Image 1: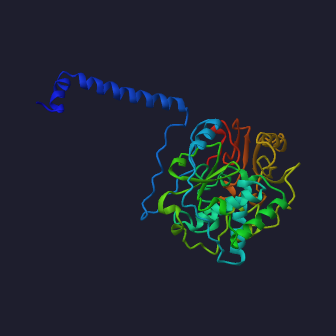
Image 2: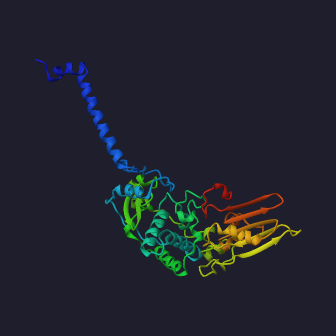
Image 3: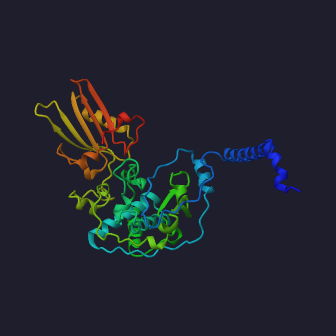
Length: 382
């Protein structure tokens, strides 16, 4: 008597059994393909986040967004499950330094809280907690200002978008700034915001950063989703870095914070939210050439005006001059009074216009990190 296996051999030899297997595999593939097609953009099955090795400090991914519509981003973000295990409240943080260094750290933190969350106390505390979590984590800079302005020298790739998208040119009321400073001071003195735990990343629910699938979603606050690293780098043991107690000055905060302006050797009289608004007539300084036919105009521009209005201002002030160089700054602290300007002042220029009738030349350029232009030829070279 043959065994069942022996009885089955003829079936495989004539190929019939293989045919059944191929049909079954094809059916499974078809079901999976149909399921993926039904998910829509950004909805393919996501692998579980892979924990970085505990002995290798992970690299911080750039804030790059997937090119999908807001409704698709919201749907894709909603399908990422919340991690509900191993959630730990952040330990109180107390800034170790005093004096101007502490005040500069407070203003960096206050700027992040205000420009990222608006004049909302709960949202500001959530943002502030992420900044402090980062400062204590070995993957990030070891100072408050270093964390907030990480990557801000680039037009893309900054960690907090307000530091490189021109948002700092928008001023808030003195009262709103004072509230943000008070909230920042409280967090530097031990206040915590437990709902976001040990989150080191967040984004709004209508965008899809490419790093979303690499982190664990642990909290939601309004329209913001908060994430931590999987594995060891998202546990309390990773948040033991020593934070600098003497934050340095940041040029981008010079117009907002007198302490940052003073540390950079800039006059502090206008580095205040109580400074006169740049509305109406621009403040103008003019220098004429030796023969009177070459004029350079330095202007403090109205940061609330449209980018296109700068052209109108330039044409009006240049008037009928055959040669006119017009340069404008929305940051009053960085507007020079002559051609002897620093690299910092030159890079902070918001708009320029040059007319040379003899050469038949006329050109207007914008600082595209502050004012987005559809035509890259209208952007200043950095």
